[in-house]
Image 1 (cartoon, rainbow, N blue to C red):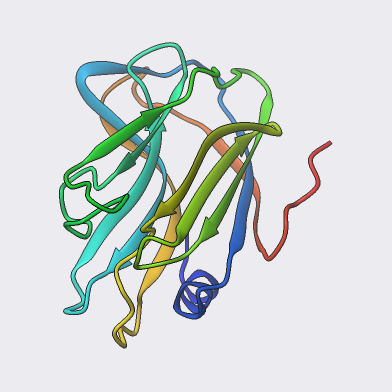
Image 2 (cartoon, rainbow, N blue to C red):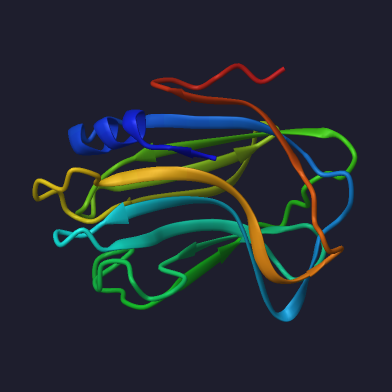
Length: 180
């Protein structure tokens, strides 16, 4: 499930936005040693229109804990996510995602192609990731599609197979949504 028009306009304008949704995991997910899982992502197009995942929210191999990866396939801007860094970077959160209940995710994105961007992710009101002075997209040079977000459910080496989760009430907003 992707949001193009709204997120693209906000990214081009450099306007901070929030992307939130409810998620239900009926079973725990296990990711094999060489596996991976893409749950949510920010995608961006470079000046030539080449598309790349910039940030991917996924699951670690076990324990239903999450990771946030910059440039998982090496196609994001070469310098980043912080100034002076290069290559893929992975951050992990120690908080396990609950199974068998609805879970509220919220992401704050300050969209930037330089090192003035920010990304903050909450789960049920608890901060999982809080990154600042980062890139969140390619620089804007008149791409018709600069950036978009996507809720996903794909990967490799996953157990159970098929892995099912349910998504509801996806919202793109200019402020935080209330969490009960």
